[in-house]
Structures are given as structure tokens and as C-alpha cells.
Length: 560
Image 1 (cartoon, rainbow, N blue to C red):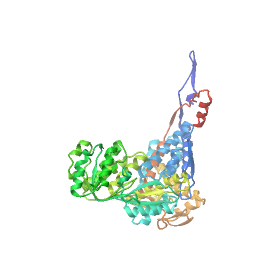
Image 2: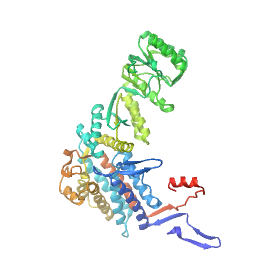
Image 3: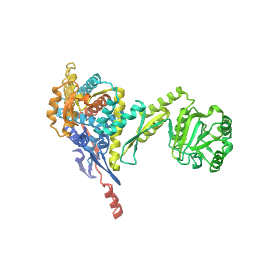
Image 4: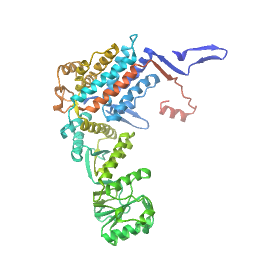
């Protein structure tokens, strides 16, 4: 080990600052880390996969069956082993970012191919780049074969089948997804929120709903319901803070002349102005209501721009713009319902469809580039508002742990359903991969030995998802593999019932894109792992902890 080598001289002993490992030893250390992460993630695969309990600092533990969540929480103390886990985690993250599901499958495939590749490299005179090319060539053949066997999703029953597999057999949540997509269509926006009770519910919202209510309860006309309903309502949108009634006199006068109610959504209102508006409303001069714009800063600007397009209004950004207001600056809706917490705008009357579609396409592009879950949620909310309808699934449970675990699975299921609708489905349970083995056998003869070995590595890995699902289900995985390989087409193993049959008819299916992406990402990472020759890591440095009781207790709390 180079880190322990050095030389003695007049100046003392000098050693390397980093740990450097070569060849078989380097790959063996990487493989140990790969195995730890893959073993943790593989336990969640299939309808009878197990839960993983994850410690969280200063808060209660998290329980989950979501592969990407498990992978992202595996950190190893030994830096050399952790590098292997990090590389494998990259495959799961790539798959999750592209299609939102299939991370566990990608992990299992990558581990299988990496192990086989490292074993082969123990032989001498092997061209590692040709081996990598062979693995990638095999993965491309598998992706093409999956595309050829793909079947389109034509019914809500098939949608629910895809969701049920991603949800590990949860019928209730799968039905909620099916109901939402049946109501909204395949491009509808579905949001996830925590329920205040133990039950799961879905709420379909038509029109545009803002998470802001009236600024004063005196605006409410229905005392019992604490709501205000405005029919054939004019809409004024501004980013300015309105301090004086003179700022909005043109809008009030226009509403009085047209004998229509006026809803004002602004960044803020002064207390004096609100008193005048309430008094004006109660005296019946102009039916008016004031609502604060949701959010703040740049996010508020984006949401108000969306709202202006959806309502056919112009967004007036400064107070000076209000003085020159004309009728074309105001939006108009058939009905506006305002309560203390929300504002519902239904059936806008004048909307530019071309501008709306351009804005919708722009937000969809931002969604594709989104990195964090919070950013993705905000963009999906904006998209739903522009489209005029969205669904919210409220996830219930007996504890915060259960709700969190079910939300993880539901999020995966929504992504799986999206890609299944767009790209089709294949038989699940790992059967689709087994049906790709003949495609590898039918490839033209390899010109070099390494290419053929790469294909064989991919072929062996294709057996692993089915094997792992059967093992997690508590049955003999070798027997399951034998029987599925002896069959053809959609014939496979249903781990829920423990029976064999036509998996598509039984609703055991996987999205084609998820399976293709998992194979592609796994092959890329596995070929890099297998062809690694040198491993360089920093030497571990023990942190110096001040010698007092408080600091020692804090250090113990964070694991130092």
C-alpha cells in the first residue's frame, strides 16, 4: 500500500497524503461498497419486498420501500468502499431523474454486471475498453427488444395495474390514481399532500385555485359558510401594493359602469384601503373583494403572470400602471368563490389559447430541468393552474412514518404511470428482461472475445430482477427462473399470488421506458466500475474535539 511507503532521511519520515490502491485490490474494495448498497436496496424489490428503517438526526426514523430513498441514505465509513456505493448510487439517481421509477431494478442490474465484469478482469491480457463496448452493445440490444415487445396503455385498468405494481400491491392508492387520470386525462396535474386523518382521498379541482383568501372576513356575503361568491366577475391583477383608494378608482368606476363585481388580487393592501373597500362593499356601491397574491418575490411574479394568462388579463406591475387602466387590462370569469383560505376562479371568459399553450410548454420544459422535489411541486402546481384543473391526493396513515412511506411509493407510481401512458408497458416481474435473452443470442458473431464476454455479462444480469423478486416473495428463485424461461411471451411469475400465468392479463406490468432506462444506466455505471484499475482516496483524519463535556456530547450525537 503506497500510503504506508515512505523514506527515512535527515528530515524524518515522509508519507503519501492519499491512499492509492491498484488492480484487483482496488476493484475488490469498490465491489464491497457496491454489495452493501445493492443488498440494502434489493430488499425492497417486488410486491413482497421488505421495509428499510432509516435513522434521521434529531427527528423520528423514516421507514420506506422506495429504492432511491434507501440508496441515498447508504453512506459507508470506509472511503474506499463508499466510492463503490457512490458510483452505484449514480445509476439509481440517473434512472430516477429520467423516469422517476425503476431505481431498484437499475441497482440490481448494475451490481450483477459489475461483479461479472470484475471477475472476468482477473484474467490477464484483457482489453477493458472492448469489454465496456461489449456491455454497452448488449444493453442497446436489450433496449431495442423491450421496445419491440411494448404494448400501449389503452384503459384505466391498465393504468391502475402499472400504479399497483409501483405501489407494491396497494389497491386503494392505485384506484385513486386511476380516478384522477380518468377525470383529468393523461396530461392532468396530480399533487400529493398529507391527509389530516387515516383515510386516503382524492380532490379534483376545476378552474384555478389560489392558496389565498379574502383580506377581511367582512367581505363574506354568506355568513354561515364564510364565503363570497361573485358571478360574471371582473379581475384586476397587480404586483403593486395598493395604499390609496385613488390608485384603483379607474377599476372601481369601470366595475360600477358595467354593473359587475370586482375581484382585486394584489401584492398587498394598506389597512386604510381595506376599510374603505369593505365599507364600499357593505353599502352596495360596488361589489368588491380584495385578495393578497400568493407567494412572494420572483415566485410571486411567475405565478401572477400565469394567472393573468389563464384569466385573460394584463398583469399591472406598478402602481402607476393602475392610473391608465382600461377594460382590456381586466380579466373576467363566470364565477369567483372566495373564502378565508382559498380563491376559486371558474370558467374564464376571454383567454388567448396560443399564449396559454406557449406558457404551458415553457413550464413543462422547466419541469424536465427541475432538480429538487420542492421545485417540481411548485412547477406542477403552476401547470395545473394554467390547464384549469388539477387533482390532489391526500395520503393518510396512522403515523407520520406510515404517511411518509406511502407518499414515497405514490410518487414513484405517478412517474411510472406517466411513462407507461406515453411509451407503453411490458410484462412485469422481471419477465420482460428474460424475454430479451434471445435478442442477445441473435446478435451477429462478435469479432473479438471481449465483445462476446460483454454480451454474456448482460445476459446473466437479465435473470437477476426475476430471481430477486422470487427470493423476496419467499419461494425458490431457481425454480421460478426455470419455469419462466421455459415459457414464452407474457408468461411469468405473479409474486402477489405465488402463481404462474399471463402477467399482462393479471395486471403485472412495468413501463417500457422504466425498464429501458434502468438497463441503460446500469450498463453504463457497471462497465465503468468493472474497468477501474486505480482507486485514490483521502487518508482518514480523526477530528480534534475540544476537551469539554458539552462538545463531547454534541460530537457523540452526530457520530464523531
